[in-house]
Length: 416
View (cartoon, rainbow, N blue to C red):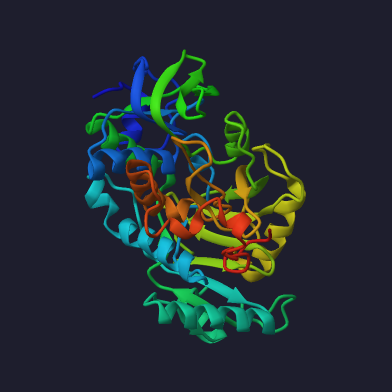
């Protein structure tokens, strides 16, 4: 293998928890065909599919920290494809199809569990919006169905459907194929797969500049471990894309926000599915270790902070305690924030840039984890062919000048 790991890393590869922070990384070569900036789920998936699908193995994945230590390690692991716009439906359904066979594909258990994702309606507006999603998804051949309150409680018995609640449950949209996966297992699975195919994964290697020749084409990157030449560079670094793209003189239509989450002490299985509420921005599932994984909203200010915000978490916990009374006596173990890049239309940017040889994959907001395999697959094809993959074509940077936006603010089921 092209990288060796400590005992802690070996335990992680065997399926145990824990993050290896110190690696004996390979020294970067002088030149690569492709450099991927960001060793999170999307970056590692891109490298894997470049090698597997397109035969491009002279690839380096550069990470300023440690493998999977950014948003990949700070998300709430939800997977679904019940988005509204046709372009989004195609992208997320492509990803969901890959999720369903990913453990077999990588020969590594990513712990994908299709336990169902249920999205609650609390008012007449919610009902109309979610029913519209159900109909749109069915037209596209994507599973989604409408439940009345009693059916919602039947699917999630601990849900409180008392009509006297501050936000009463009036119904729910359910995607049964949705679910969760183990976030660090996904990173490790793609890392092992890419490594097996000859990709170099280089940690503790921060990109400090993007090199260009006289004609403006990318020629490589400057890093804290020396210059690295490359014919093509792909930026896949959630939360820091604007900073990296500015090194090449490209201004991005992005804002970065801390997205809050927290986790409870472990308990016996009580939560059989994922339940989301857009109106009050609270969603919850249960991990394999028994922890209740709770997603909260975004902070109201732009920031690169990865710390939790008490006022956001408190609002979420009040709502969770009302919707799920059984949780009221639970203690929270920890809270954190991931940095989400948000575009004006709440849809990602995948494709080429005005700089020849420079590609970008960013702006996923809260949709990043669920799209991981699909994102890597179409981005790899885009880099290999120097033109957008068919599914990625609508998500180009140019849409913000042509006005062909993909407005997914409501379907994102979040408070930004």
